[in-house]
Length: 132
Image 1 (cartoon, rainbow, N blue to C red):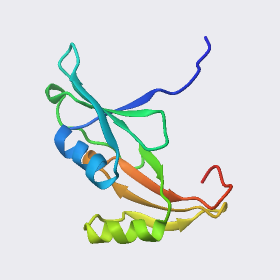
Image 2 (image 1 turned 90 degrees about the horizontal axis):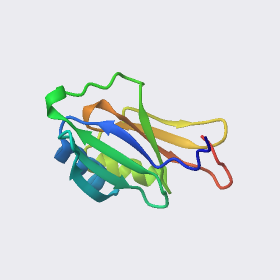
Image 3 (image 1 turned 60 degrees about the vertical axis):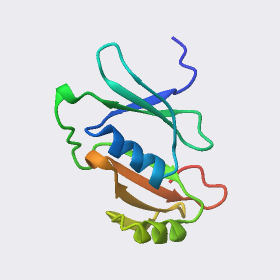
Image 4 (image 1 turned 180 degrees about the vertical axis):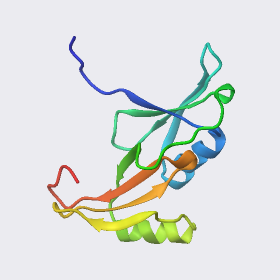
């Protein structure tokens, strides 16, 4: 086996339209495809600027409400300016659930919650820093 790249990550969601609105309208991701799978799952694929990997949202109402345990899964997105991001979130009344925090590398980050309790980490990295 020779894995060559990560293509997408699937996350199951309770309310597809609410979740798409969060990622599209708040975070600026682009919905590149929506479809229904052969077993009846509603799927949406989201693209992040400057990334090849997609986020696949999956809604399958027959399996019930999604409940994500705290600190189980999160997505991390890089932002240009954390202070401006915080102000924009406050203006939109989106609660910051943790941070701002500065890591030992000098990166600064906060967390917000997406629908169903998925955590979203927003990171401002100093020039030349590859990880948090």
